[in-house]
Every structure is written in structure tokens, then in C-alpha cells.
Image 1 (cartoon, rainbow, N blue to C red):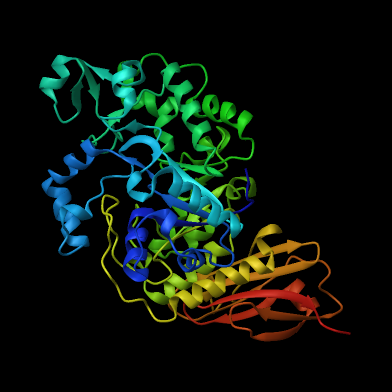
Image 2 (cartoon, one colour):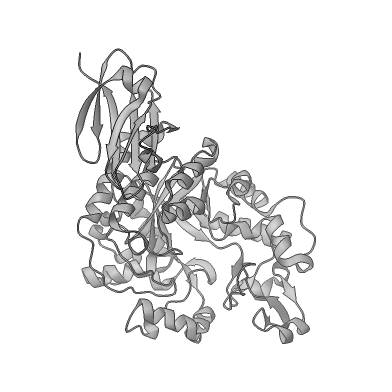
Length: 493
């Protein structure tokens, strides 16, 4: 298994993407039929990990529930005018079994996809949904003890929260802040049998990929699960769910990467429980809000913590970036997350500027015109950052100083990357007006020589004396939402 340091992850909504491939290339919509050119499009230089979202067997029963839900049907029609029942594949998070869905080509198709990615030196990330399964998952009939249970009174009193199968009453899956999900059954994180079967399932999944993205991972911690389910869950085990699972999986797959979808400030807890990376939802929210001060405050967290966060501007659960940010702001925010420590996640369609967030139930998406020049920007940014090697160095947040009569520096964010033979400086004006500042640089070797600052995105070149950059600080002046991504190299004698 390949474990990537600070991976660049590209999320692909597999079913939608295959439908688009079929339309554009005129081929069958199975993973084993995807032409080389379509795989090449995903292999953006600098991207080293592909998350094929939603490859597992979807539940026929879950799909039927979705088809009968008027609110869901409205959301499908809003996202995809002219939607038909054939366009509704069912939820990828209502898993019937952890076997590649035949609609995507089955196990043969998944193996073909991994082979294509291996040829391009791209690791494969797949889903795992620890909190719940579909009502027709084999565990429901075979292992009632794996689930949170109820009684006849619960079923009659609250049928939206419970369901009956095979003479047993089960709780429907739930996030404690939202109503129960109607199409899934709640697993019991405290069940030792479930923990063993989870390990066995992840071991099988690990034979087909390099890592897993674990859906709503914080729901399975002892703290959250006990608070959500109380006495129905039973007594919390001495060991938390994730350490008991991840430790055993890693004995067989020591290089397997674990990524947690995490909220509620649970990132640090999940890192301590074995996850390599956790979603950085707080940074996402602050970037969306557009307050540079709050972004800077977030970036003062300890480096070991930040190195294990996943930065993103969109994913299948969030609105499209092009729908939430104007173009200048999106490019500034993208430059930031691409040059921060930790993992980065991009979403297929983001580079083209798609604006429609398509419900995960759908197997087809609307056609949308691409935003001119946006993909070229993203490809240039990602390739430049990757080829520079900056994210393999040591990261440091920098100060931006203004003057008594000019505090526009409050909108600037700056950091440096340092490697044995390389120096990089990133400055972003995260506001809609010009800003000026002096940014003291951290490198003690600066004085007594001249230095060349070359912008990796624009190609602009500047020569500056080293002593003032070290003491007073490099003078920067940037228009609204503008950026610098500099290499800093000694000038020729």
C-alpha cells in the first residue's frame, strides 16, 4: 500500500462521471470501458490520489425509499431538469454490500480502474460508511446484535426513527443534530461483533485500494455515540471504536491511509485515534466567510495538527465553489489551500467551474458550460506547487506589518516553506481591495547578497537585496484577491 505525505486528492463522483464519459466518448458506462483519454483527464499533474466516491453496491431497497420521497424527488428535479427514474442510482451511503456495484462494472471494473491509476502512479481512495448500512445489508438478517435496537413501543411511537426486520426492531441511522435517515439502519459502535466485522470488511477493502475515506467518522467515537444513543447502545467499551479497528487493520495493511470526514471540532480527537487526515471544515467555513483575520487565527494551530488536516473548497456534501465564491476569491482561496500544510482535496468539476451540486443519489448530471480559463488556472497552480516540492519542506506562518496610516496589511496572509535547497514564499490578499505590507522573511542566510523572487504562477521575476527582506521585511503590494507564490533563490554572483 502507498501512503502519500500531504496528498493531493481528487474526488470523483463515480456514477456521474461515468455517465459523462459515456456521453462524451460514446462508450459503455463501466469502469473497465473508460478510454485512456478519460483517465488522463483525471490524472492532473500534481494530483497523486483519486477518490472514486460511491463504488460499492447500492441498495435496491434504499433506492425505492428515495424514489418514494417527495422532498428528495424535488431536489433531484432542481439539480437535473428532466430527471427520470433511470437517473436515480440510489445513495452511495446506503450500502448493500462492500462489493463494487455491477452498474459500474463490478469487481472487474474496480480492478481495471486501479490498474489505470497505478499506471499513472496515482493512489486509490474508496469509501467506508461505519455508522450505518442499508436495510437489505446481509448483517441485518445475520447479526441483529450489530445494531442499535428498539422495541414494539418505539416502532409504534416513532416509525420515522425505527423499522422492523425479521422480527427485530432497529433504529434508523442518525446524526444527533438531524432527523433519522429513512434508508439506513444504525450500527452499534459498542458491539464487539460489529468491531470485528468492521475490521474484516476494511481488510477486504484494503485489498482493492490504498486508503479509505470514512463517512461521518466522529459519530462512532465513544463520547459521541454514548451521547447520541444512551442506554440503547449499552456500556461503552474501554477502548474507542477507531483505535480498536484501525490498529488491527494496520497489522495487515500497514500503509493504508485513513481519512476522516469530521465535524464539531473532533479533528484532533480522531487524529489521536489513528486517522492520518481529517476534514478541515472550520477552514472551509472561514474561507467562505472571507474574513482574513479568522483564517489567520485558524492557521496559528500547531503544525503537527495542521499537517493531518484535509483542506478543500468543495466536495459532494458542500455547494460548488463556483456557486459560493466569485472567481477572484475562488482563485485566491485555491492558492491558499494548495500551499498550506496537510492534504488537499479537489472535486471533479471544480476545475471547470460547475455550479450545480448534484445529489449523490443521481447517476447523471446536467451539462454546464465551463468557465473560460479556470481549468488552466487550477492545472497551473497544482502542477507548479507539486513540481516545486514546497509542500515537502517545513512550513511557517509569517507576519505582515503595515504602517500607522496604512493597515491594509490586515487582509494579507503569508507563509514560507523551507527545504535544504529551496525557499518558497506565499502571500495572498484575501480581500477585495489593494493591500501593502512588509513581510519579514525567516531565512538567516538572506543578508549580504541579492535574491531572485520568481512567481510560479505568473512567471514574474524580481531581484531584491537580502538584508532588508530579513530585517524590515519584503515590501509587497497586491490588488484585491491577488497572490504571490515565489521561489526565492540566490542571484548569480
